[in-house]
Amino acid sequence: MFKELIRKLNIEKKTAPFVLSIVFTLLLFSYLFFSHYLLGTLQTLAIILWSFMLLVIMFFAGFMVTKSFIKIGAGISLIIFLAQSYCKVPHISSTDDALKTLIIIGFFTITYDFLFSLYESSLKLLEIINKNDKRWPIEKLIIIGLFILFALLFVCIIYQVIKPIILDLCIYK
Image (cartoon, one colour):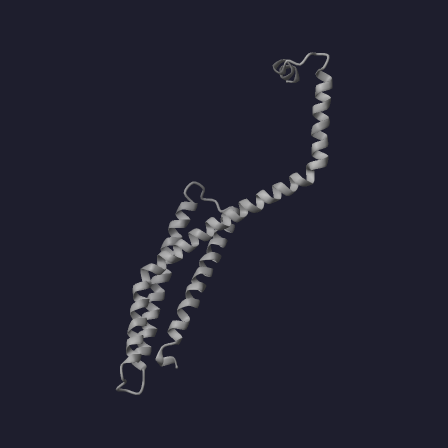
């Protein structure tokens, strides 16, 4: 192997040991001197790669939750519009039981539709993940766990936006 390398580089036989000793000395010196720099560089690259993977998982989780939320957005908008319109009209009855019932039943059906849409999207994701390999190694479990965590995070964010709108209705004041 070294003979072929020496032949390709056109190094004379007399200077070959000298050149090889310089190369090995440089390699050893670079390993000893730059090892902490190389280790830091590898750690930085690993952190960048891990961050990119988390970003991709967050993107897909957000896309799935947003897609499911868009499917039920019309129902939520309708219930909020009806409730706000009801609050502006002078009331004939002193109780708001009809509106409370409408909101409760509407949000139960909307929540069911939202969770079912999320479930369908999750099944599609699992089909993509399990396409070639039906085993469940730790990497798949970590990715799915992170995906579920980020999906729940996006659902909590949506809840935090909708909650003040609902609590601002006249029946809750």
